[in-house]
Structure formats: structure tokens, C-alpha cells
Length: 109
Image 1: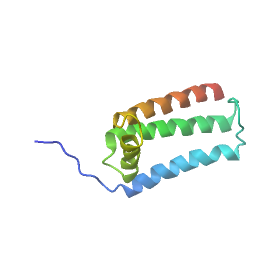
Image 2: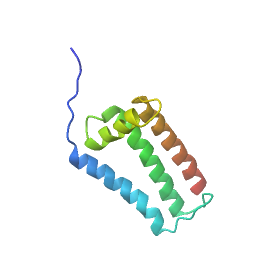
Image 3: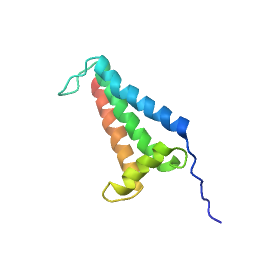
Image 4: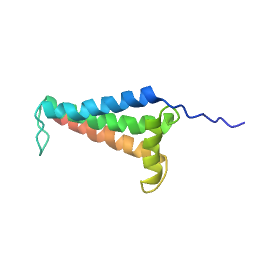
């Protein structure tokens, strides 16, 4: 007997995740983010959290892609637009996002 999960629309969850990503993506501009090396300050901290949040989205989408249209879209990117094409790329991108965001956060604090 297969343990198949049915895809849920997850519209509220998907819109919530998208709105959190948009907020973390836009907030650094209000604090005066600058190009170049990471400088200490709130703008760099928010940018690091933004990078970490994308890593977390990839990581969550690997396990819970059946919960929301957005997570299925992230998995689709991993399965169709990545090389090698597989769901495992979501874990790799998640590790990369969390790792780069953590390094940026350490430098920004």
C-alpha cells in the first residue's frame, strides 16, 4: 500500500510565504542597503535573513511540496530547471541558502 499524499491547494499558506519573502526582500532597501562587502547594520541583517528564508523555503518544499502550490513550484524549478534534475536539488539549494545567509548574518552583526 503506497503512502501517497494528495496535493492541497494551500493558497493561504503559499500567499503567506510569498508575502514574507517579499517583505524580507524589500525591507533592506528602506534601511539603505549598499553594494559591495557586507557592512554591519540592520540592512545587511535583513538581507541575510532574506537569503536564509529562501534556503528554508527550498528545504521545506522538499518535504512538504504537497501542502502548497508555491512549494510545488519550487520543486518544479528543482526538477525541471536544475542540473542534475531532481528533488534532491531542493535540499542542496536549501543548504546553500541557509549557509550563505548564516555567513552573511555573522558578518552583519
